[in-house]
Image 1 (cartoon, rainbow, N blue to C red):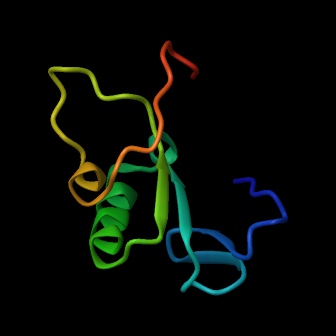
Image 2 (tube, rainbow, N blue to C red):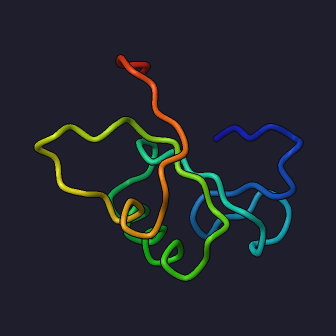
Length: 81
């Protein structure tokens, strides 16, 4: 796990590397396990100060939990994995 030092807090799941848990959250969706995705989905439904980086959803894929509570701010084309 890597986080730039300008973030006021960093962690993964229940493990905190520094800072407090009440800060805005940035999540790289693809890096999370299925259980972590479930955990973050519950957390996101309770707050509005989060950002998710993820691949665009294909037309035949189901809507992801964060898409229900969130709003898309930008999109790129191509596969940047």
